[in-house]
Amino acid sequence: MKQLVVLGATGTVGRNTLDVAARHPQRVTVLALTANRDVDTMFGLCQVHRPALAVMRDAGAALTLGQRLRMSGLATEVLAGADGLHSAACLPTATHVMSAIVGAAGLLPTLAAVDAGKHVLIANKEPLVMAGPLIMAAAARSGAVILPIDSEHNAIFQCLPAGYRCGAVPQGVAGLVLTASGGPFRDWTPAQLAAATPEAAVKHPNWVMGPKISVDSATMMNKGLELIEAAALYDLPADRLSVVIHPESAVHSLVSYVDGSQLAQLGSPDMRVPIAHALAWPERWASGVAPLDLVALGRMHFEAPDPQRFPCLDLARAALQAGGQAPLVLNAANEVAVQAFLDHQMGFMDMPRVIEHCLEAHPAPCANDLDAVLALDAAVRQTARAAVGRTPEMSA
Image (cartoon, rainbow, N blue to C red; front, side, top):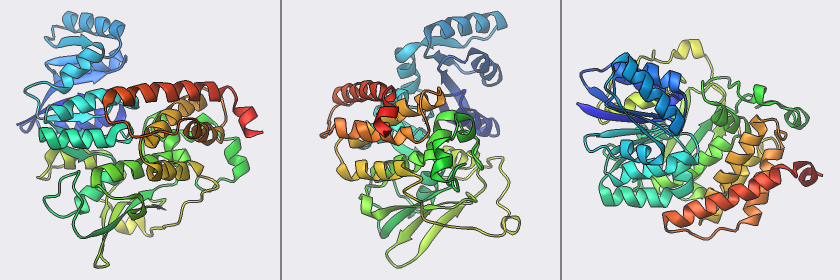
């Protein structure tokens, strides 16, 4: 029986994780759920899954949730804030922790679960981008098993040799190819991109995702972050990592071997597939997703990404090649820029300008401890917020 904690339970990945878990009640017990401030959704999840612990990052939301749970007769304990998240991530009886908190807020609880030696299912990109070397070193010390949930990294993991564990150099591998849908703006002209709205950016053609990752898909920053993740997960240099646009999102990534073979993982664009794989690993469980119909699919297309339309991808590759904490700078600046775009504070093509400005303003040496990581993250966000107000000037 696997004992599951879901960090970020009310988001898309969290809800899909609980959907898969509910299909296997004899194999999975839901121990704890966490969320930010969505009391209504969390209350409903607690009613269905009856966890021993629920955590709300917002203290007021935790108070409201606790009152509603008591009134309903549920015995779920409610905690609040960063300490509550830490407690959930480190529950002694937990065996598996799904890390699905969006943004930098997911770093500390993810690292706590790794330090506690859990099977950590990492769905959020930011912890590995911000502190990949720290997380992988902690896993090596604690014996934690890192299982990637991003469809691309899970696809790679499935195509690597049997028995492979994240953090080691995969034997016989020449390179990794990450596929990208191209997002909603794949064929847009630069003039169209300059006028793109948040409402259009979040309408992904293939995947159902939250607003932040949907915007990252539209800029292709998500693929840049995945390059950085891949370097950490699979201990490979930037020159052995590449990206190809594949609009159908049927091939989720490929592994190129030194003998000329390429292994690809195919499947429907549904997050329950990688979630079920990681939750069941090393077994296979039903996910609730129908197999990919190749005849209905008909054809598959592949093309190189256009750096003029997707400058964020090149910025991410440059940060990976620069090393040190440049990926952290990239991620912090991107989070601020995406939120400003979603809030209609600046244009779509202003986002890469803000990110590039922050990379230039913060030449980042290697930070070997968590305090240095967090201090740099805060400083970059301050720089990015100041730059948001100057984007017309920056683009002039």
